[in-house]
Image 1 (cartoon, helix red, strand yellow):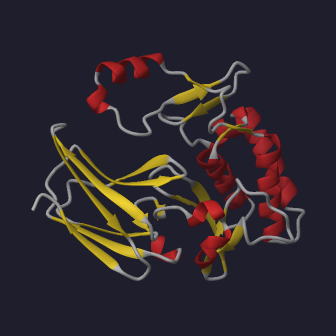
Image 2 (cartoon, rainbow, N blue to C red):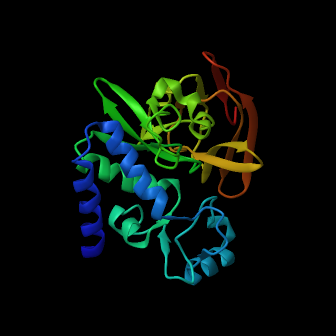
Length: 264
């Protein structure tokens, strides 16, 4: 904490000498992009939790997509994805390693400390995470994983209604801040109503991008679910008691609502 705190304060002090919020956000992005090791698909980082790996290999039904604890490499860099230090911006600043979620956690802290109202948002499937900042009465997306040239703000910093300027955000299935669905701030989108739900051990919306599968978990304890989704093809998947499975494909179109009933 002392070393990371000193580094974070140094970045914030630097931003205070800049004349605009765009310059401050660009400086934060440059700090993260210039000196951080990208974790995702980096072969130097290995899954590094023997107990958790062994447990899930012995009890595979308990394993869910995205189960992970921490990764580390031979240089002592570490990325913690679960536990007390997950998404801790001081831990992230200390190790200088991570992917979009870690970058967003650190950028969110730095933006708020620099006097910019910011909040973390993202696709709950784990596909991508970024930051929103408030400009006047409107929320803008701020993606610290993108290059941040001041003369081309549209790809890394723009009103949320211009999501298509950012190729990664454009493909997100939905956008949440905490447990709040704010996908309607990121048009185009359509609605999904799911009824007839019974308690499941697994209940998710699955989708694919570039051959990778993503799983958006839903609360199976509710008898009905309502959320907004980006137009694309999806698959509803439910599994009760690890035995009975149910799947249904559907497509979301802009401005339209799909109604599904499970286990009718």
